[in-house]
Length: 392
Image 1 (cartoon, one colour):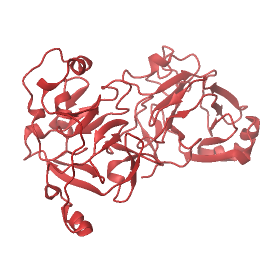
Image 2 (cartoon, rainbow, N blue to C red):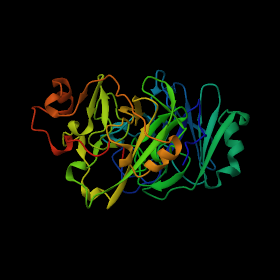
Image 3 (tube, rainbow, N blue to C red):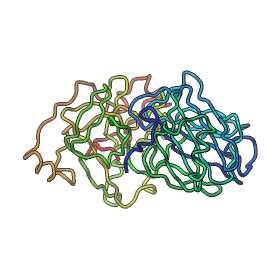
Image 4 (cartoon, helix red, strand yellow):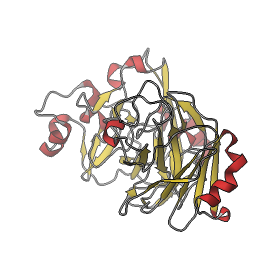
């Protein structure tokens, strides 16, 4: 799937919409109140921060006058992949949002009721706007645009969706992509069906398995570089070693909101923290960074790695991580033959000049404190070297 093109200012899109619940208090007013349990979630699909100060959100129901539901306060900026969630009037953002919320949010100025045939508008200060349209909203779209004080000629995108039933939402799968599906509501959370780690590209975040040789990605320093090879390997949970279980770094686990969504890596794939390469397995603390249990994995699963011209730092779910370096031969991967067909033979890659932490006893006290690791223990099996460094 591709990143949606229905965006404002190069990246801001509607990401999730929910309006009816009789079982869950999504707007945080203390009761599950049917048609006013509404929220709408926006997402930055680009690879750069976008200032959304002054954006206006209009909520329009069939038979009602267009209503300005919320104006984004000044100084509000969304980082790449970050979300902004607007909940219905009288709601409580902190009550609505899960404890691991990524992004920002606010409470609307009106009750965002749903009747039928809803049009939702998001406009920037210049008057450009995008539309999220439900069911028969097209029957009165033009009138709603004018009633909202917008110029129809400034419409830059529209998504047409089927309304979700009670206690469901309509959401992009995954965040920012061009397909909406019905799901369990997840305000402020990434919309993920284990579609893969998302990599920063010049056109936004993209699932690693959707990338291809020649596609351009971003390095942490801001350079745009082409993919030389997308390595792929299928691992078996039946015959694999226990120390080869992948590691899940939960959203925000490493501070400053990073990663912006849960990121799963093999245990010796390094992330970059304070200028140091740190193998993921070293970071396991049993709470915010964990090994993925076998019960969550299929009999086999596929992992990927990205080779660029140099060993460098790329961004996965916003977190600096290493690109491929040939400690492990490319013949360990399922698609090594593709590499040979393209390039005629293997090449050596010089490792970047950064120190690497491969054992917990080497962790600096500041990093142990961040992760809540109060003392140095014997290295767990997760820290041992695996057959590949890959992003799951």
